[in-house]
Length: 286
Ligand SMILES: Nc1ncnc2c1ncn2[C@@H]1O[C@H](COP(=O)(O)OP(=O)(O)OP(=O)(O)O)[C@@H](O)[C@H]1O
Ligand SMILES: [Mg+2]
Image (cartoon, rainbow, N blue to C red; front, side, top):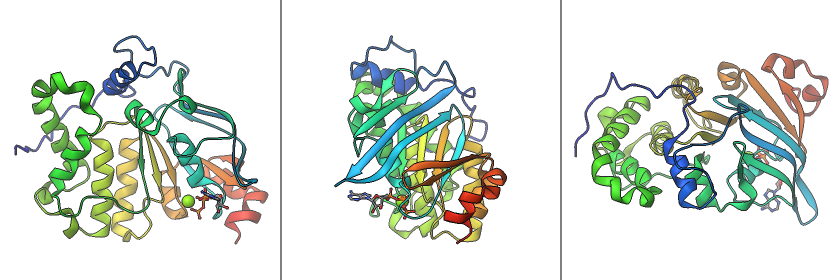
């Protein structure tokens, strides 16, 4: 195993298309020219229009419209049952909308893609409960995560292996687990497991990261570090963060969407939505 600290690792230029995403799309036959990356020419990475999801007649999402800009850090808030997790299920292909359009970039129709294709195209998701492999080391968890989508790279693997090692080393620094690289993941604290899982997404270099209640159960210090981490990821990645912790939302968000009964109730800065009478009534004023 070769892990070196890469303090001088150069970040990719902000908003550069993800090379993997372009290649994966070619591999799954979505008709993109080779190496073009995700088409975000209008600056929007995610477009949801008129999305509805029904469970036995109950509308978990109801004509929802949502647009996420490239490099944006968007917070989604709203009461229990508002449809926040269902929204992530729709974006990742886990739940199919009964109505509406979902686009990743300008040209990728998420409704026509499988969950695997969506992940390969560059949408990564973190669930609330950490799902790391407890018996494997921190490094092995990252290594496994990095390999999942790489059949398309098979012929290049030998050449990329140095790069992949560097990418893992960089992610270890980012999630502050460099000194725990050989520790079994099962021995990490709850917060560290959450950071490892975020690292497992980052080694796949997703363009859009979906994070459902990332700071639930974290200590104050871990929550503070998560805020710093997300702010540093924005720009290079686009992030959609669902969270009930208003202190955390206030620390990271420049743009907040309030969901209520499956629709967008309000959108704007946290200050703007906090002053909205309807938002106070259904959520914040509880
Ligand atoms: N598979 C399902 N079958 C039936 N109803 C569902 C299903 N998934 C979600 N629902 C319902 O849809 C509504 C929205 O649920 P969702 O989990 O998206 O809410 P949420 O905003 O994430 O809430 P929370 O803040 O509690 O996590 C809820 O009323 C929920 O009971
Ligand atoms: Mg939820």
